[in-house]
Length: 111
Ligand SMILES: [Zn+2]
Image (cartoon, rainbow, N blue to C red; front, side, top):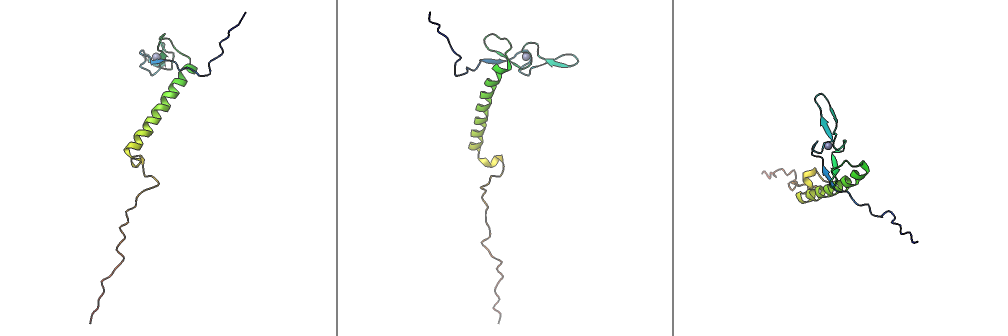
């Protein structure tokens, strides 16, 4: 008997998740008097894209993590294209020295 065992894969596959349509991805269900966890996704605002069932946070977080990292990289790239100055004064700022003129008084050669 050869027990072919499938070990856990080294690479974790990211789940296919979709925004919960019941709460619009907020995870909050607004009742008449108060807000509570969305009864459909149970709070996270995300569902399994295949089964449309709620997922565990340990399944959702890696997906959001990778999306967040992608988004931050995009933002950083966009900032670079716009020029770093829009993000505030950088360390290498050009100072325009308009100091060519000394405190030159006119020379009176009065006789
Ligand atoms: Zn929901």
